[in-house]
Image (cartoon, rainbow, N blue to C red; front, side, top):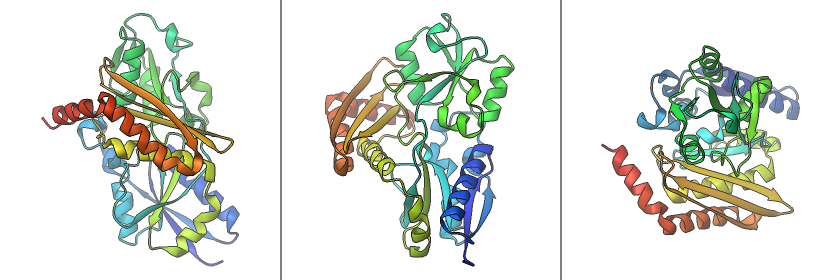
Length: 311
């Protein structure tokens, strides 16, 4: 095969690892296929001094990659699906999702073995509103400080003593060979993950049948069902980057269970619920769970958060 696939990727070590991982999977599925990385710097990478919520949200990590694909400078982009907004640009498609890695959040500390072991008033680093909400609900005594940058930068700041602990995604640490830094993997009932956490997705032009067919062998059906439920939940909520939203689906024996959460950044108000049903109804389940939370009061909370964020 003389064809080539060009992968648009951010330059961070984790993004490059994910792009190379997809490249290896593609070459294994299609011997002789040439795969080339097209490294780029996104707006999200350039913002390191403040939380993304106030700058436009996680979509800042992928916009330039999508522009490169639409302009014909690349064929696909590889994403951490937790960074992908619920609505894709016109003409774009998540053509394949890989088998989900560990979706849990990781507690990382040099001095403490577990979240419950942190002393009163300890400083914990994260810029995720979702994590802040759940941390403040569980441990209102903690000081939560902004932590931005790639995984290596965050760990360096911890090692320099700026924080007593930080929260990162387990999947990212393990993909970089840094799983040994994890002191505790926080179960979903303690820290509900972000929608799409642990899932690598591959985006391309919806009209590009050649690329879609090359990506087809990489698709993992069970992961797709879980992702569809989680993203339908997020989309139906219509939340913004100012909204702490969490959603996590698990599949067992053809049945899908989805947990969802909407809260305030201070952790004082939290709406949480779960639904279960057939995996084939993943999208309906996600929308139904969102509707239940909206009716319970999350709708008013999201409107208030959006209004506060606009000022």
